[in-house]
Image (cartoon, rainbow, N blue to C red; front, top):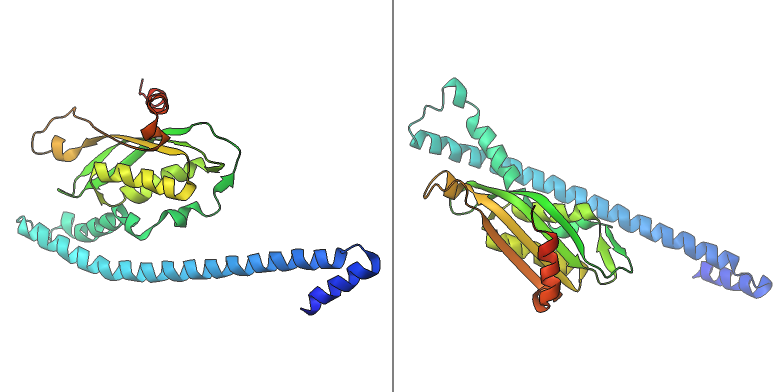
Length: 241
């Protein structure tokens, strides 16, 4: 309060308002710096807690893989398998790390005010995930489009959103919708479109064993769902050569 009074007196004396202006600018920067530091400390604490949890779970997953290998009739004491349960446990934690992430963890300050209302498309984004039915991979390409509503996002963040939801046990239909809904929630655009084309190892390595099969799923929100011409434009621009 005293600083505010000082700035008011300065305005009264010389009409410049300089002292008040300088104080408020400095105060704004200080508040922003404090909030940023608080957020950084909180993020570090959460990361440390998560790492401790992962370490405790790692032992349980490793023991489970040891049981599986023995159930298959393998000798887990032979040289080639001595560290396999640990390696497999670490790999599984990496392949499912999306459970510990949200879009707000990666967007940060990457949403920008921009007077742009034409379609933005990022296509051919590589995607790898694990089918929740058989725990075998499916992989392919993701095409994303959105119509901005005065806000745009850093292009690399779209690929990071794909990674957050693909690094979980998934089905392709749900993955497609989750990506679209996350972008819609974060940007509030006029519309979002997501198409995924993927090969599923549960159809290639086992079961029907169809080597060349591909599964295509789509999620259309907003104008992409309501306006056939907008949807057709997106599908034409993302069509693979």
